[in-house]
Length: 288
Image (cartoon, rainbow, N blue to C red; front, top):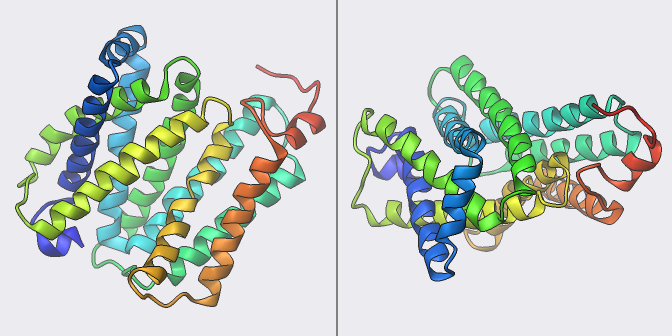
């Protein structure tokens, strides 16, 4: 929608999203008297927080650019789907053991749900650019998202969610804005686009990442990545309830699969060591 109303590039949209989120978070930390904790986090873990901030800026930009080439549906499936599989595979490698059947079933069900939801979205488009480039960018976005999530999991236990979100988001904005400025305009006066950017910055970025980092304090990275699939599911339901889009049977099945997958992960419990089924099956497994 923003592309159709303004001349902002995908990189500029990503930069604006991060900048708006950073502003909201800085105001929040100042109001709560937590600015010092942000500085302490950066000083204590400068390299890792910088890597997470750059990763956030990178995978969001790759995803936005890939949409212009292959459309939102394909980009979302490749990015979120590949990240879910990669993080689960990484946790298996770290545990030096194959994932349990239950875990594999949950991941497969979640990815199938994502495919059904994304492919059935009426608001998605097919893109109009270089398809191979778009597929590559969406895949790279998923890989970078997986790496950033793994790094964030380690940091979430050491830094409070608000401080971690503020630090990484601000660094991401600082990293991305100079690049965005070189591609063209980075601001707009279009009211519709400003509202869309505000939503992206406040809801999907600020609130979304606060919840993600809070969850990563107790949940394994793979569970957190699966939980993020609720975003396209929620968007589909809201499009039906608010915009009047048609909710197809495949989309309904996809939403149910995603919700059930998240519910199963919650019911079995978990920690960074993994859900109960993982711990029971692999008790005594050799760890690095």
